[in-house]
Amino acid sequence: MVRSERQLKRWEDPNGEKTPQRLAYDNLKKLYPFSVSEPEQIAALALFLASNESAMMTGATVPADGGKSTYLKVQ
Image (tube, rainbow, N blue to C red; front, side, top):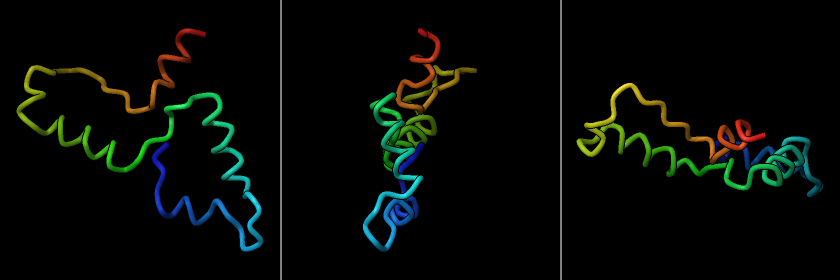
């Protein structure tokens, strides 16, 4: 999950109460502390993959899920 301005607006209702989206986010953060990324983190990964620094990477999958996929394999 990538946190965005649009999501932040949906997380608070006019009365200041947490919305269902915010409650789901809070639960996700408890299970997977690194699962929510900032847009800049995804952009940095994309820039790396587009750069010469990633020239030796071929046919690789690079998960950008904050470790969630590794956590699910362990259990």
